[in-house]
Length: 152
Image: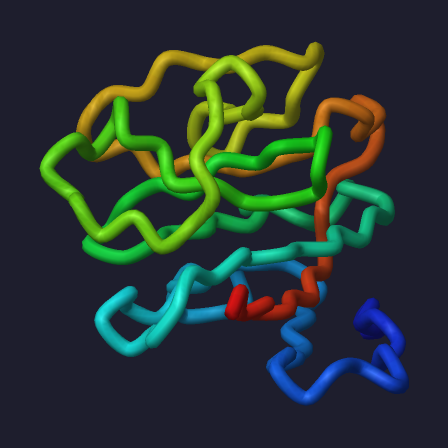
C-alpha cells in the first residue's frame, strides 16, 4: 500500500495554516473530510485544495468534501478554490468562502467515475464526489492536501 501526499510548501506567510491529508481510498476512511465550521474563522477564508490522481482500479469511493452545516463544497478549476454551493443548501448563511457562479464548479453524483465534465444536479441526501474536469476517465482522486488561506 502506498499513499500520495503533497510536499510541504516552504516559506509560507505566517497567516497561512497548512494541513496535509492523504489516503489511498476514501473507503478506508471512516468519514468524509469536513471543513471546520465558519464560526471558528475570524476572517474570510479561502479553502485551497490540491488533488492527486492515480489508478482507480481498487478504489470504490472517491473523496467526499462537506462544508459547514453539511454544505456541499464545489470545485472551481479557474482559481483552484473550493466553494460553498448555496443553491444546494440555501439556508446556510455562513459565507466564509469566496462566492462563485454555480456553473464554474464540477459536482459529480455519488461514487461514480466521471465520463465527462459536467455539473450534475444534486438531490438532498446525495453524497457528492468533487472532481476537476481534467481527470481522465481511467483515473480518480486518491489523495488530497489543503490549505486554509486567511484573508486579512
